Length: 291
Image (cartoon, rainbow, N blue to C red; front, top):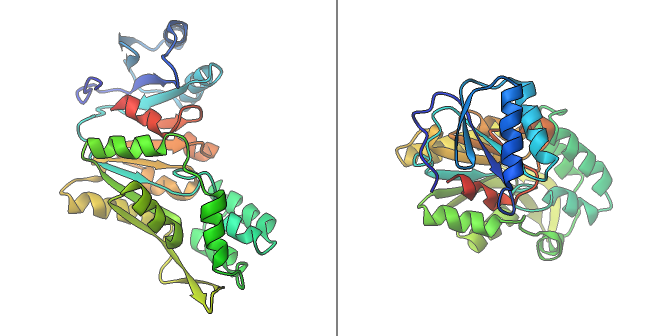
């Protein structure tokens, strides 16, 4: 377990790699910090910085690591390892490798149309997630329920490191929470498969074995995701600062904000720039290197 840095008043850096971090990468990072006139104290593979980082510095240091096929975690000031008691995750393109709605649409011959709306929404170009989801689901009207089973069995895969991350979180007695703008058909199966503590998502209406093109109940959008994270923390007597929150799209930003640690997985640029940790090379379980 890494040293608890809850008393350090500025950010800290740690290189994350699929293999052991090479000495020359740490040396290069140290030289980069000196060129930026950033004082630091090095503790093993972690750099305790003497001041806050500007956005261009964050991006530049991450780019340095990316060119060497590593990720850079920028841990916030007063980061506390022991305080992280909740793991909250998005599902589509974070925990799993696909956007389920796009794959369902493929069975209706409408994948291109739905996928473009999905991509624009995740990039933050379509701000109203609820409207976006309803438009996409409407295009699924008439798709047989069997298509959901086909997507799950033939196309859905866990992203690298998912099982290790969840099991590692449970070993640390963390409460695991899946909050998704996707669908209950898939989140329930993820809960059973990974023994997640709780899941929240949208329910597709099905009549006579066919999707109606409607969603039942309120939409789980970015606001709802954030509320579920807060509720999970509150139920445990905790604040959101006790949550490690992972996502990839613009509708994850609200639940990632003000958390104890925010992690962007293979994420859109707007998400990576705001996240404490951006994982572009290591798997989901790379986060365990920080704990």
